[in-house]
Image (tube, rainbow, N blue to C red):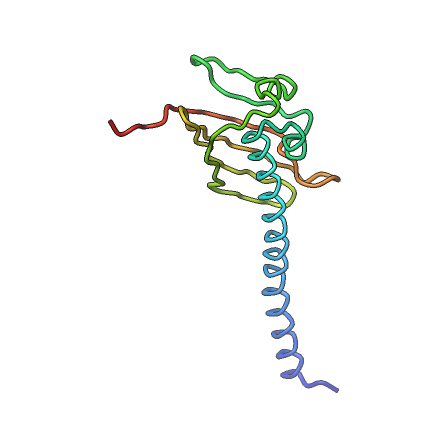
Length: 150
């Protein structure tokens, strides 16, 4: 038979174990999800750098829209239109970077930078974890001219 002190110590230890093991499991899941999201974004970068529509399709949900402001007006385009901007076989000189990723359960937000010869794009992706994996479901973009040292 357990004494009252022994029960108290056992409950205390069990409570601490539960308290500290749950965040570790969540961190492990987030690490796995982080790597999967990074892979999705790399497919997006590959699609843009090499005009590779198949890579874009690995990253972007078919119903994704690109959203941006053009001359102060809200503008959005669907993915078939977006894919039309890329000519097969054309390599685009650019430097792409993941700036941040924030994950909560099955939703995530990512901020990326894509620097081309003339413009630097900052894209904000919304991603969802779907049956077939993480997909970019929304892309909001802004851009500015590349700063030159003259």
